[in-house]
Length: 304
Ligand code: 13P
Ligand code: SF4
Image (tube, rainbow, N blue to C red; front, side, top):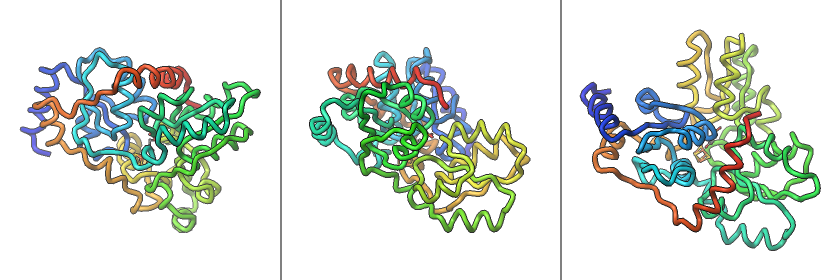
């Protein structure tokens, strides 16, 4: 990366009193430039805690929205406003209201990969790292609606031994990883530990050794003596794993598991974002207040 570009970004970050947060799937150069990298939960907590005036969110829209909901006094910038998450768009607030009407006594838990409007219709929010703990903390007396990711939902149902009402949403990046991808990687690296994200299909998860959020993958690999890891999630995850554990080898389960939205952020866009203070992420106050209740409950629950 161009040294002058890096210098300009650093200078402007300081002048604007900005902090740069980047998700673990971001391009390597963005992760290297960021002040903090992490999974959805860690970045939400960081966004809520920081005393920076500006947050440059290098991730996708629902992540920047989460930061804006938790910290309305801060300016949250998303360097590419088209960086969305198709999974988050798979349920609308209207569809959730219909589902609630059909199950009037149910509690609603939404995955953080959802719109602000859907969060506002939910009682609780969670990420893949604390979904099991969150559902375990809820009364057995109530039915639970879990939206929008069916695969994370089935993982939570199995771990908590609870019947959840699921929504048929999915992440197109994770469902592309097939059983054969895992079998082939295991045949090539018989000693490898297979780490899979809960957004993967049930068939893939059945072949995995560990089901982990991206932050949990980093923690697990750090404390493991294994030499080889098969990584069943978005390919960008291999970069922080390798950076943290240079002695081990990390094999992506599928080279096709690329999230195009995560790759929209570039160093140039980060610079323009800081120069022009765009794109500001704002949430209408009546939605923000309701969504914040669900998100406050999310950041209180520790990862599993
Ligand atoms: P994590 O919370 O595990 O980082 O996952 C975010 C995500 O978008 C997975 O596709
Ligand atoms: Fe959304 Fe999937 Fe991309 Fe994660 S990997 S941001 S769930 S599309």
